[in-house]
Length: 124
Image (cartoon, rainbow, N blue to C red; front, side, top):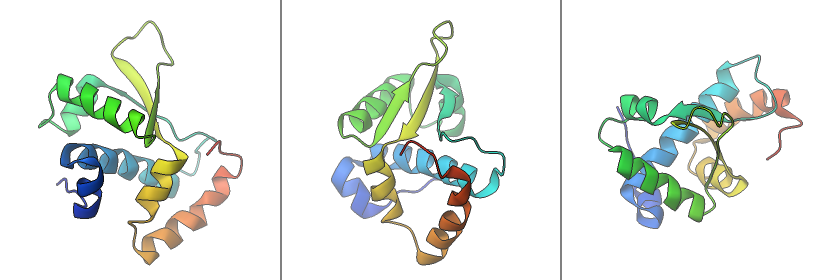
């Protein structure tokens, strides 16, 4: 089930809100549950994989959403493997993290904080 925060949707748009919250959810899940996490929080996904999790977005809509989120300094993207043109890596920017963490409940923030010990040298 996907959702969006109404206040966030008013600021950045409904589709951008849904997409950004899904990226945040995956990043947060990685912080909390992945004990072998490295110092970077990049999520590597192809357009096909994104559509698998968010079938209500077309490839064109995904490109537009990503472009808008990058333009608003909430998301960064990188193409690590130049041979695979369909796969990109995504990460929240510092501004994106601050915005998303500001929407969290205190109990969730505590879980995240406890697990940030693994990311002391993360390039946030």
